Length: 527
Image 1 (tube, one colour):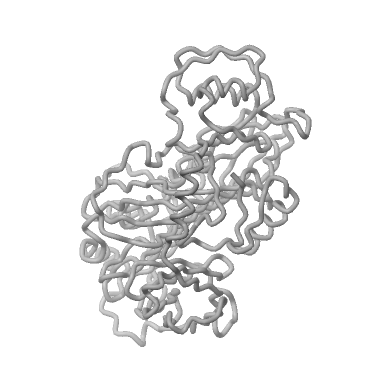
Image 2: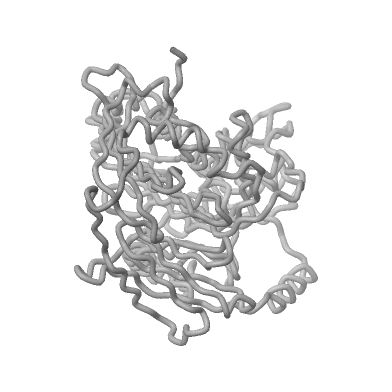
């Protein structure tokens, strides 16, 4: 049997490092800290790391802005970080200090700013459709409901509070918005009838019993075989360009530590080529910097945007779908639910006892008509968590105990033009971090969300290597920019109420550095 690593265990790699208090005065900029450094013919990235280690500061910059692999020299004795960086970069960048974070950006000429303003003014008009999705009978909110336009690949999903916002081109005002949620009747809303700023959309739950439906295939193993045999009929065989929204949120205990988000372009590899990899290109992004400073340790996520596409279980063919690993699992047909007005099998799976392998447990949702996998929810089992420890942690401080306590994933697909396309993916991972020596006892919770907001045929445009996310990139260190009308006409996942309240409170307390954008209900660092 071939050895196949579980992609979930490799999905997100965490870097922990001890955070040492520097004892600097409250109003003193970290750019005024003095350093002494002698470096000859080393990559710029290595020089920044040495400054970071010596002065206990952290750098954020656009990976396309700085040639991190370019070798340089730096010789300074008792000079400020500002002076050292000006020498290193020949004073061509703008340096901004926020706490112990140094943001490196490029100055913008006035004529460029004028052009940007002109572009904003010429943007096509959009209809903003927002509201909340609710269960008609129980009155509960319905998170992660798929919201799309009938004859288009444009769409979004509701957040954890059931709230949504969809930006619709005015040219589509005669079309229809579709709301689809597993176990509920599909709801259709004509765009021409959208008059209010806020809607409440009620979905009717459905209950389908196995005996009420003529079932021709009820053996779970046979259903799984059909998923694979019909893969090339159900999923695209040509590469696609996907416009997407990605958000990364990190909490330490119940406090938000980092929130970063971006619009990205994904060149989605065809499903008939197992060797072709998805490519992720950064378009624009923004972040807050230290919503609440880390306590005692820094916690960083490596390769998030690169790895999130690997949650496409159909493309990666993970262990619970791979025929070679079927003997590791028990499968059972649990029920039939309705999704998008179509009957859908629900197959539950879990690892067999005493399996020495990092297995998952969860549910597969399979469209009864096409036998396509339309959604998968899976978590590392208790035994699987034992394998996750060393695979997930790339680096940790000495004498620190780090243990994963929950590793949960979800991926869904949306039907358009008789094919199923990747629609969304989520990764939620919790770690317990302890150190008796440093008196640390915290739970870190990382949440990553990917939403495909539009799909177009691949136009053959060449992607430069330095434009793409790599497995080594730390997303929150790449995102640095901000502007007032940031997202423009791009669709995003609306922030949850909990996140909005937390950010609003923090930014109001730091009014000299931050600005509240009420219209978008998102708060991020000012440029």
